[in-house]
Length: 291
Image 1: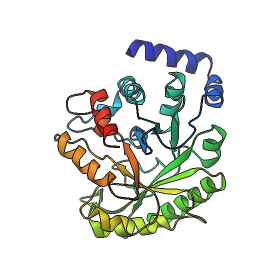
Image 2: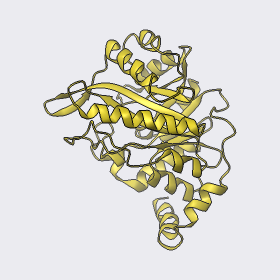
Image 3: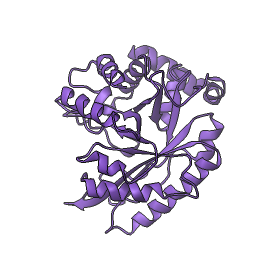
Image 4: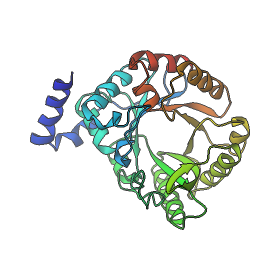
């Protein structure tokens, strides 16, 4: 499978790069943001562009691109999975492989806050733009928003995210905002995953842009999630976060979150692409069954 993936991608990238735009223009688009279960079931794979490769106890798991693409193709082919969230390089690889027909495609926009960098909070928009997402016929854009009260770069990040929300809304495209309150601990950015911090992050993210009509939130599961979600009326998606050794407990947490009225689906990456037993298909099928 690796050899076939490599052959097909390299043939286009080295000999027919213009074909990538044609593949985007001619692919069959999704009729709706929702799958047959009435929810969104999105596979996320935008981590490598921020220099983040860890999955569970595997420090470099996502650094093997062909392996990642193989896992993505497996996940996207499972019934009930209706989309992908990724940066241009991965989206284009999946276009070449024919894995995006009929799928929702969310382009990851700000990947400039490289993991571990001194400028991590200054999360520049270095990938998709709203204009490029619309031109390719994709369905929306996602942005990460870390709010560090002690880092002046937070102001630029807020302004940039607000502008992106506005530009996506002008094109009637979904704006998926992933907000956190963050702090530097021993020189590294750490998200504060408490109910109070997430209430604050959700409230700030909800007010970005000239309209929130097309804004959705992507948040982690934290204690007292009901109180967090009471801070907004925006549709919400649950993110998967780190790979857990206890998959049963992880699935139970997702099921409880999905029972809340404003939760409209799951956006899961490493937890499904790199399960402890490496059975991607089984992990994805279990997640879909929760919907």
